[in-house]
Length: 107
Image (cartoon, rainbow, N blue to C red; front, side):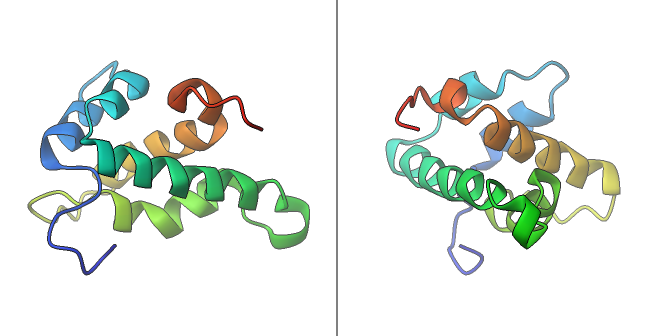
């Protein structure tokens, strides 16, 4: 993902997530179909990984730190840690509320 020309979360959706009171489910719905499907697969995998937290120490936060920079890329790198908190929080919410955000009750 890091090597792709465009980020999985395009700039428009990235900025929408950064807005106060952003509804993650609504933002996810505006993603192009391929991006949405890919994101759903990655978040489903992350959710499964977090399910083994007692053995692998991968909390939702740890997964967000690991995957976040590859999923969310602003057009301009921002060294401000508050910027990183935006996508960490968004990814954590996607993991914790996976079924609700992606309308997937297959678990």
